[in-house]
Image 1 (spheres, one colour):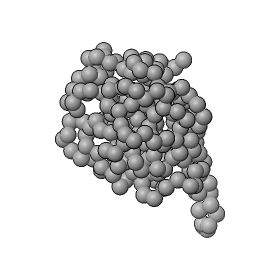
Image 2 (cartoon, helix red, strand yellow):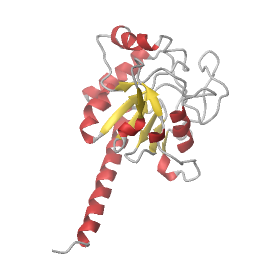
Image 3 (cartoon, one colour):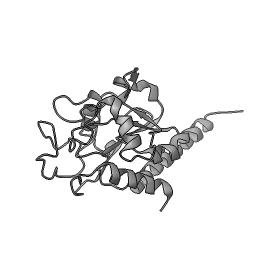
Image 4 (cartoon, one colour):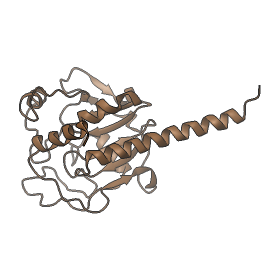
Length: 227
């Protein structure tokens, strides 16, 4: 296996001790094919504060980029950043109380505890916040309303899931992911236990589709040009 996959897999195992729900149906969803979902707006309508609280970031800064919303995944960002790809990290303490520290403690925990060994995220981390329930962040409401749920069960929520009310479209566990296209609209959604290697292949496939579409557009424009 490639080194980037080993790093990401090791990170997931070391940092998160609880086991997420078992994979069921609909482990990944193509959001573009779900016409019944609410899709008004884009991620560019939302802001998020950086982890250290130094600024409020308008997600319009990522206009034209392909963005992955997740907790922590260094390897994918390093591999694909030259292709207009970035990762935005939104820590949450709603899953097994696995992020109990204050915002200023999260980076120190990553660096010295789990995964440790001097680990430093190579992408932007935002302040810890809720991704489910009555106090969930607006951008996550938008993402979830734009894609059907993945997985068909929460497992046993007792002492594991810390929000109310539980809704089937909620984030099931850490490492559930959303891919957002250059137009600011969600493209795919993955269940937490879908492997990093499969996510990587899906993203590469999406990049190839973007490239093919752009090349076709250039051909159509070229047909209308005369010397």
